[in-house]
Image (tube, rainbow, N blue to C red; front, side):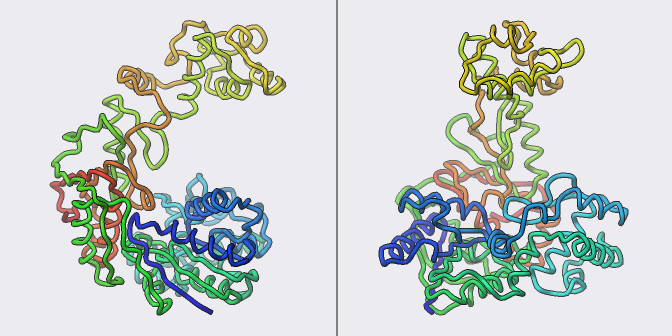
Length: 506
């Protein structure tokens, strides 16, 4: 079996390189269903599927082993969706424990337990992390040193949670991997590609060992300098020692010269890493320093404001809303997207244009239906479900046949079911002329922005207490986080200093 580790510094064409590996395998006669492409990240897998589909005319059914590691376990073990732990299950467990769990979805798109302020989720995250690190729960508890978490309660939850899964036949995302490792069996493949290898936990590396049992050729790809998910149990040392044959992609197609100089300085702060050199683009770019984010004119171009913590993003968001600026925060629009869509549909109707029944259903979903503020007769929204989906609908046809009672000249901010604050925000947005579901300004945590890029990056240096504590105790972790942040820059980097003592030195 041949193995190679490919280091892909920021913007150096790692995904392109992996697609070229797949291209050569297909040209040499390797069937696509004998190629496995795995990652912890769903984003990575989706991109691989799309690129493989476009480049090699492959359908999803042709590549059954292009999967996240969680999905691989789920698929291989023959699990069903209704067998997974969900919010209802956590409510049951919480009721028996006297603990509160978050009511949103338990796991994010990559199968990682979502961060939450709820007590139950914090305890459960620690249990999950111990499993992913393959260490006793007591050891995890001692190493984390979070005295807000009480050991007797943690131990009890572990027992109750395990018993609940056994009694109900339920599994969580961690179980998908653990069971596959325990069985020691995987699909028959010739080629294994492991993307984002720097972000795998010890348990996921054991799953990779199972997957490569039948493989003849194995490639690992990632960047140890961007290993920023240690809080999930990741240990980058597994990647660094995985094999002897190493290749470094050395030309970035994203990072400009000025930013590259700063990147090199940050990389030198990381003590445990693979030494590597890579070149910038030919473009100079710029680095700009500010004392306050409001000094920055974000009226032109595309912008992403990044922060180590959500607290800082929330403050920035409030200030943007006060200024009537529409933005996205961690991918979510600052003004309800359904309401924004409904408003645009209403403008179309006012202009005498047609909308589809599906669009009309979206519009009706945002309209008040009871009391003096009703804009549509109660129960009439259901009539739209019976209409031919291709039938064009006008304002008058909605009035005549589907119970619309809103005046045609009514402003959208009065039409929709909005709070007073939402109405004021909408009016401010309209004054700026910015009505879009793809605003120019985005807010993101650094972790959420990993894998992304933008023309203009605004980086807040204020870390908050806990990350600053990590910087003192385990500096490599935070050096990697800010290295990752800086390398999102395609054109201009704006660094916002902080008067707080809890700031990262840039």
